[in-house]
Length: 301
Image (cartoon, rainbow, N blue to C red; front, side, top):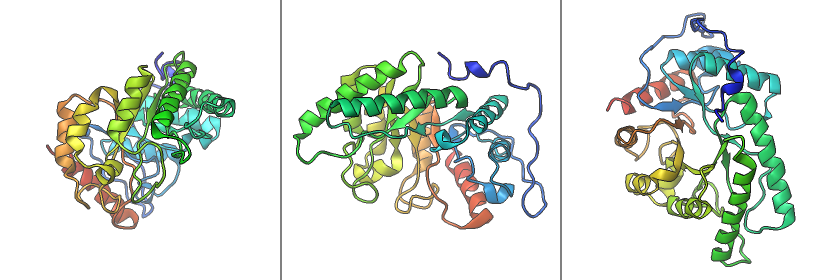
């Protein structure tokens, strides 16, 4: 099932993207050259340049700057009418929506009925959000490590729960992407920590609805070795998150050579979304422009 099929009758074709006004009254600079990869700013990442937090205005601005995607982790919390409006605008501009975060996900370390019940509610709600927004994937973090259970048993339970998720998702075609999170800076005690571990789980689940979102910021902290791990886990990677380290800001502000990483991903033929899940090193509209410039530099391979 194509995630955007429901939009086919509602998209207004042939309308040019409007130039968005900035808060100082000037028009936003246009850069019609599309980026080589689908870097996805948060919908309101450039609200200072746009002069508004309105989602549609910001999507138009992102398209005008050459971005082919946006992301919004919390899109599921927006009113249904706004979700549908976002989907129509993205379809009109031929843009993609990155993975959104599933709500109410329990810890996956056991297969208790209460865990299964919570999974069912969360994933069924995610299918409805995806239907309204056109999103093709939902992000899932399988919770905390269980200090009272051997890790191997937990891994088996996580695999079993992920298989259950796939049973719920397979009719819709929505893909869940598992995100490993670092312990040392942001998320101590999470079960899923690195790419090899996520790869093992996807191999165990063995279902097209179970994939990985490779957050390169987290993985630089957890394990490094970014490009070799991308290659080893490639068949299960459906999306990327990016942010430099240290600081979790735009490329070029830390130690990761994003130009080389992006070049490698592009050479492998990646066509998915790369969510710009980071802050900015400079405050305000000046910093927002610096983010755009940083991606132009990183994309110049």
